[in-house]
Image (cartoon, rainbow, N blue to C red):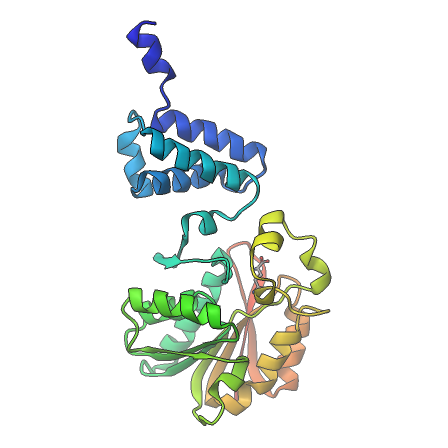
Length: 295
Ligand code: GLN
């Protein structure tokens, strides 16, 4: 075999990426090219962008075996974030485990809404409560953009609280974000604190829709973080209903909701006595966040 032939057959980074992109596309995995890059960078222990200067490099056997296993699992629908143990959200890197929801791009709308509310209020020192924090990505993103706010972040899942604790420490927000484990407002119990802003990305998928969700969501992510009960709004209803007792006068509640829940969520806010209710669209044009003010 001439060295030319051998070279053309070698599994270079470039060739691995192309093959994997096509394989994942055939398996109907979203963003197959990005996924291929993330998995290969993980197997090689480098950053994704470094792959571009290594296109002709040939990974060693150990790296190739690790990569092949990652690709196989990705093809079976395991979320890339679980395979590589991390996910970027609001330009920050978060450690992700199967105990927490993988941060979604649409949740950046919740962060942007929070930033707008705080900036418009002219009160940079405001205290914020974030319910259902999961990986802690929303609290960290808000803290990274608003250097003077303090947050309390809660989750009903002790495992999620531990993941959030790691992410908060890693980004250096341990002195500004306090974590509490408990069921929504019950996590605050004896504490009678009120907040200028309450945020939440609660579970809001209808129980009956869970089985219809794409394989990687329903099979691999925590049901507890997705299941919003029979109409999807059971947790949203409790959050909206309890908000006025925990908000300062003039304080705002902002909650992420499902793409078809805006009308019902608006009724819930009005029934809870919130005013100036508004809806904020996500990048796909869905009404994704509902916000209302305690008058
Ligand atoms: N947007 C998520 C999904 O459809 C649901 C997130 C949630 O329930 N908070 O996968």
